[in-house]
Amino acid sequence: MDKTIKLRVKKEIERSNELKVLKLKGSLITKGYTEIIHIADENEDFYLNSFSTSVEHKKEAEDFVLDYISVNNLIDTITLL
Image 1 (cartoon, one colour):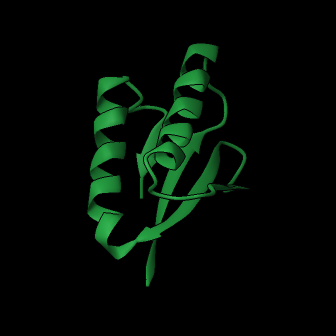
Image 2: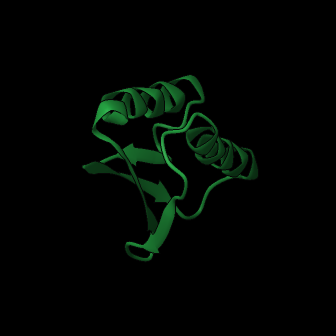
């Protein structure tokens, strides 16, 4: 059974951070954690991005996201829920 991982992404961000967010999403797909990422408005300040991954890859995907956020200084832009 697949598990859903959710990310809260700030709407108003600098262009350089926007590219980093897009690269994160592309990396999640390229690494095989998911095939599609769903994007919805959470409120006027944030998007809610969600994707499903296998139970076996859930922890690995979460660790990848947290590492990516840290390395790319996106702590104020993306939150793993």
